[in-house]
Image (cartoon, rainbow, N blue to C red):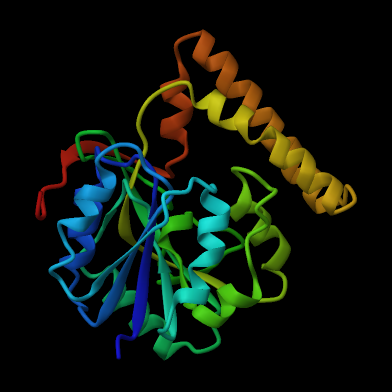
Length: 270
């Protein structure tokens, strides 16, 4: 019986999907199920996934429907048979020891409910350009939010705490805000994911999340906690728009990282 399920929902992810899959199959901890969930892709993503069905650890779910990320995320725990469940995105790359190290931490610290990791930021050419969190003398840090594709928790936790699918594009933020005071959230300061950030016009991504922000505010009755989050989100939206008009959006993208690193291409198995 596998100990953990690694779930990757995907939609039109052909550009980087194979690298994401290979990074999972190359893990030092190999007793897992890799669950690939298609959200109605119209490119070659499904064919890429099907190439790896010869590996008995790989399972594919594809019903031809496009029902959005939140619904796919909520469907995963119900079809998961393992004790632990790990998030992963279709354009990121796992550090080869990610699963091994996170499982060891969870087994050694049973009080932790959700465990994330530090992450390297990479560009379209797999160049490492930054690090999400700074250097810390403490290997485990208490947090209230995560880089979403780094998390691992018990499957039961995901079943008890579903994403709100109406909080479009901010499903994860709404989940952390709703649950962090009830559970133990920790992150390891070691970067165990290569998190891809590419393109420009990031302000459009923020603008697309505005309906979810207003829904979240109404749902939680404009409480101070959610109002503060919404205010920060609105300010960030406008800043990204202004910086884009000025041709300086890349400065804000780089500032997401606590550490700026000299470009160095990551070539573990690519």
